[in-house]
Amino acid sequence: MQNAQRFDGVDAIPGDWGRSVVCIGVFDGVHRGHRAIVQATRDLAAEVSARVVAVTFDPHPSAVVRPDAQPRMLSTLDHRVDLLHEAGIDAVLILTFTPELASWTPVEFVDRVLVGGLHAAGVVVGESFRFGHRAAGDVGLLTTLGATHGFVVEPLSLQAGAVVDHGDAGHVAWSSTFVRQCVLEGDVAEAARALDRPHRVEGRVVHGDHRGRELGYPTANLEPVDHAAVPADGVYAGWLVRTTTDAAEVALPAAISIGTNPTFDGQDRRIEAYVLDRTDLDLYDEHVAFDFAERLRPTLTFDGVDPLLEQMALDVDRTRAITDGT
Image 1 (cartoon, rainbow, N blue to C red):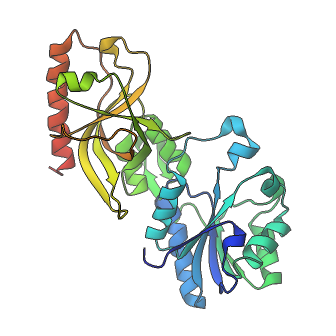
Image 2: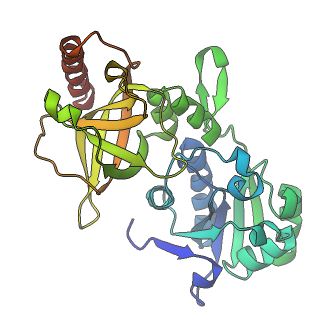
C-alpha cells in the first residue's frame, strides 16, 4: 500500500505523528474477523480525520507468558504487516513482547503506547480484549482511561461479519484458533475461506533426497520458519511463491507434498513442492512461500515406483485444474 509505514517500537514513531485511531491485537493471519476490526477502525478514523494504526506484538505473547502453549503461527511478521497494510492500515506499530512489556500495568500501556506514542483519538478492540500485566485490563477499564485521556473506545463483537457455517460444528466465529485447527486438520480450503486467501507457509529451500528429480518431478524442499502452522500430512494443490527484487510476488502452480515419503521408508517429515512443468528452477537457499489451495489426498504408501508415478501424474492433473480455476 502506498505510504504505508512500519514502526518497530514506540521510539520509532515520528515525533510529529498526529492523531490516530488504533486497533490492537496479534492479528495472526489477518483473517476476515481481523479485517472487520480494521474496517471499523477505518470508519472511526474517517469520522475524526485521524490516521489508522494497528498495534501488534512479536513474538506471540504466549511465547513469553505461556511458552508451552505457544500457538503455531499463520503468518510471519513481515507477511502480517503486509496484510494489514493491504487491509487499509496506514501504519503498523510492532511491540516486541518481552517479560518487561508483559509487566506493564494497563495504565502504563495506555500512557506509553496509546497516548504518548500514537496520540489516540479512538481505539477499536474485540469485546473480550485484555491488556496489561496478568491481563488485568479489560474494555471497561480501557473506556475509563480513554475518557481521561480524550479517546473513545469501540468494542467490536467477534461475531460481527465474521461467522462461518462449519457443518456439524455449527456457526463458528472466524478466529486464528479456528483457522489453525483447519490447517492442522488439512482443511486448507476452509482455512482459505476464513482467511480470504490461501494459507501460506514460508521458509528456506534446502536440499532433500533429490529423489523427485530422478522420478521426473523435481521438488523444492522447504525448511519452514519456526512455529509455522504446517498442514496435516497429504498432497495439496497450490503455488510456490517467489519474491522478485522489486518485491513483487510470482506464484507458480505447484503440487505440494507433506509427509515422510513412506513408499521409500522415509523418517523425516518433508514439505516439498513440484512446480508444474518446470525443471529449470534453482531455488536452493531462496526464501519462498507455499500457498495451499486444496487437499488432494492423504499420504499413501505405494507398492513400488510405477504406481507412485501413476498417482503423481493424477495429482499434477488435479493441481493444474485447481490452480487454473477450472
